[in-house]
Amino acid sequence: MICTHLARAERADLLAFLAGLSPQQWDTPTLCAGWRVRDVVAHMISYEGLRGRELCRRLARGGFRLAGTNAVGVAEMRDSGPDELLSLLEQRLEPSGLTTGFGGRVALLDAMIHQQDIRRPLGVPRTIPGERLVPALSFARFAPPIGAFWRARGLRLVATDLDWSDGRGPEVHGPGESLLMAIAGRRGVVEELTGPGQATLAARIGK
Image (cartoon, rainbow, N blue to C red):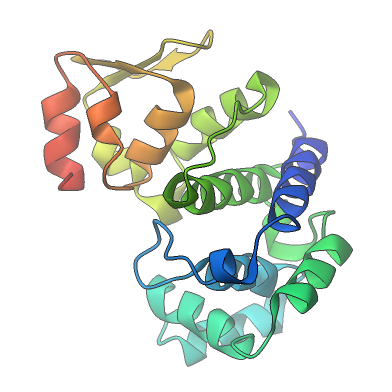
């Protein structure tokens, strides 16, 4: 399944949401520790279009660690204001380079998780279209950068608002978005889930 068009739609929704934020909201802390809204957006943009040598240079500058590499990208855009970030995001709605990996699933999952990283602290929930959320959930379980495989191992995840479930073991039930954010390691989300496997997942996240 090619998900590039779904990733583009997810980014377009994020762009529309961000365009309505106040200057103060752009400086609101997100679920990404140490990152404000503007930092999360800068992070997303910083990977767009990266290829071969550019990616290798970024990795080297980040000490070949994911956290360090992410920090390099954010630092490069530290002086960008909301208007510039919005303009750049608008120019990069169509995934390119690294984010087109796995049929666009990298871009889809990245945009979806980070949009929720922003929305949740701002108290602005949304209903994610099922056609986007289902492939994001399926890919998330095995996407190395977010570590969901280790958090969800030995558990069966069951969405209560979608026709989706995966895994074997004690069940964890909840809305698809809550399952996604929990296995992505976001704290404060696992309380929205139920089932015999919920405590195991909570312990792996550290709540």
